[in-house]
Length: 275
Ligand code: HPA
Image (cartoon, rainbow, N blue to C red; front, side, top):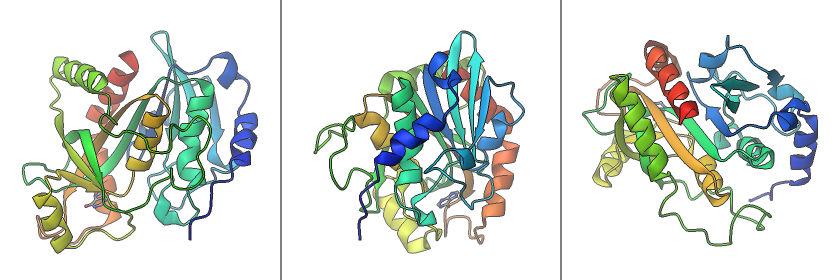
């Protein structure tokens, strides 16, 4: 059964942030998923807040999801980076999943970068490839906008024709091309998890034109979009999806593949901030 989001928690979470988040408010925000979240671990920051100190966010149980909010500066820009993602499949409802996006909205961030690890459905995608998400298919029937309309979260029936801002994607593509780093582009299918998919599911998704599959990102992307943010999302392909490579899939393999791709992932984050 759907439990409506307790929006009183939004205020509590906002109040828990140190005042520097308001004094030096972020221009852009990011939510970094599996493997990506450690990239900023040693970065000099204006502030660092543990997820445990943000009511409603808490710490997830997924390895590779650190659970720390950073505020940092780069070339005159300020960035609020949520290092570690909460997922629907953890069973804590929508609050921890949507709270980072809501906090970014309250702080006035205009651009949002979402990153994740994903399985390659398109056989030309292999471990370590970076894929810019052009559009998505929500296979789950789950949506954080289900329930009462929340002020600031768009109309009852939001348009979905441009969830991922084309201009932002273009700038990211250009920036990565200047660095000589290939950036693929494609369609991401969101599954509820926590199981990896079956080979039959992957064959079906391939028939729908899906390039990559994963268990996150779409809830935050559609929410950022209805809030009027420009959204970009990037997957690090960590494995061939079920039945394509023939191997058994494990989360350890996912983390290993992101470690190998780390220098390119780091570059992508810097390019995004510089846009
Ligand atoms: N399926 C779903 N989620 C994933 C995968 C996958 O193959 N790889 C990394 N995250």
